[in-house]
Amino acid sequence: MANAKIVGLGHYIPEKVYDNAYMESIVDTNDEWITRRTGIKERRISGDSEYTSDMAAAAARMAIEDAGLAPEDIDLILLATVTPDYFTPSTACVVQGKIGAVNAMAFDYNAACSGFVVGLIIADQFIRSGAYKNVVVVAADVLSKATDYKDRATCVLFGDAAGAAVVSATEEKGIISFDMGAEGTSYDSITSLAFRKDAEEIEKRISGRRETIWMAGQAVMKFAVKAMADSSQRALDRAGLTYDDIALVVPHQANYRIVDSAVKRMGISKDKIILTIQKYGNTSASCIPVALHEAVASGRVKKGDKIILVGFGGGLTYAACVLEL
Ligand code: UT7
Image 1 (cartoon, rainbow, N blue to C red):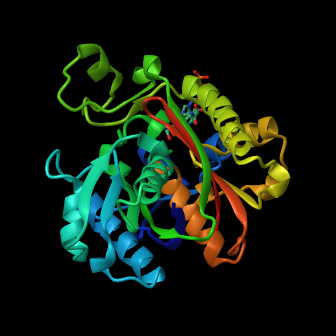
Image 2: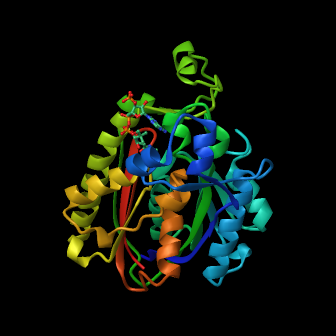
């Protein structure tokens, strides 16, 4: 049975910047509050006619090139997004067409900010079963297009980005273990409405735009700390490893305070964590692959290192994965 390993990484960050001074100019907030409560200094914003598929295609192309493969070598494209171009077709199919991955099946799935890790776990199943050899997992979102810029409690948090990995069949060690789960009773903790017209939900949105993201910040924070620490521990236990074996933990970047508390619960030192939130804010499922790509590109981690990727998000969902680079 083949192992599934990340053999290529890519990411895309749009150029436009909303810094904290800009946020101060549009809502009643300030740099001191945003920095102290979230750790965010800047977020990147997609162009008016730049969509999830454009950013996902750029990240996927880069990951395929990094893997030394051609688009025709890809068997499957798994795309995580909560801001698709269309309800149908899937954004994955749009990306398949854009990058010329003519031999690939392509579909979207939704595990919100846990999406990239969940995608790696799905890819692992297809590869271990022998069904596919090369799978692209891509996470992309234009959260700025689903942000209520009249709501200071959410608008300071979100940015846009895409991150991608090529996961291939190999004899080497790759994905070692995982843990994932959902807490659907808390489905209404983070919402963005599609067809539902519940008056109560719409009233929560200051702008009245039902597709904008609303969340119960405090409740999500509480869930996130426990979910990330406990899920990582279960994945480590399944791998028969401890944090001493781990070179880097790449957490979802929603709030540096969440990461800080999770690190304490994990009992690890801060130098085992990567933080990108100050530069990009929360970009949903792409936070993890963007941070991972930056860690690899800067030499912070290298081939043979064991790492943990761990995310949480709407659903509510969580997912952790131990892998060897
Ligand atoms: O990836 C999706 C998952 N999402 C998350 O993980 C987000 C998790 N939650 C959070 O990161 C935090 O809950 C927030 C950053 C959203 C909020 O931080 P908090 O420490 O939980 O603040 P809070 O909601 O308890 O609000 C404290 C105060 C309130 O004022 P009062 O009622 O104490 O007078 C808010 O109105 O801070 C106020 N506030 C702000 N003040 C200045 C809320 N947003 C802002 C703001 N600027 N942007």
